[in-house]
Image 1 (spheres, rainbow, N blue to C red):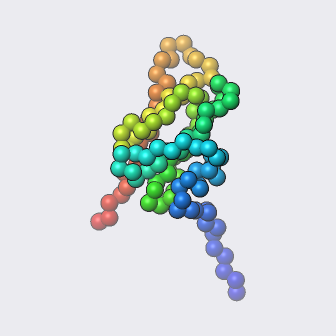
Image 2 (cartoon, one colour):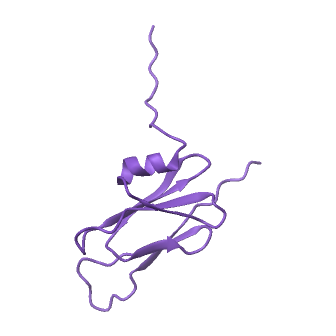
Image 3 (tube, rainbow, N blue to C red):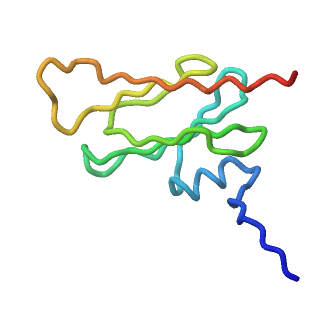
Length: 112
């Protein structure tokens, strides 16, 4: 009798290798303060309004924890756990002035 297992996603413990599979080559790489996570960013696009992607990878597991694309603005570590990025809209809405967005690394559950 042959047993079936659900397929496991391919994982690698090399964060750069994973980032290059997802985002392509020539990436910019930034560590957070504690060096527990890496931020990988695609190089600026050839066209001004072309979206740029970024990816956050947990170094200890090599797993991607956040992926986002944004219209050229910027992306950076705000602090050890928070990414800040400016996502310029394709069409600016009246009275819309705040294009700054954030994402925080979720807290890991503590063992009891």
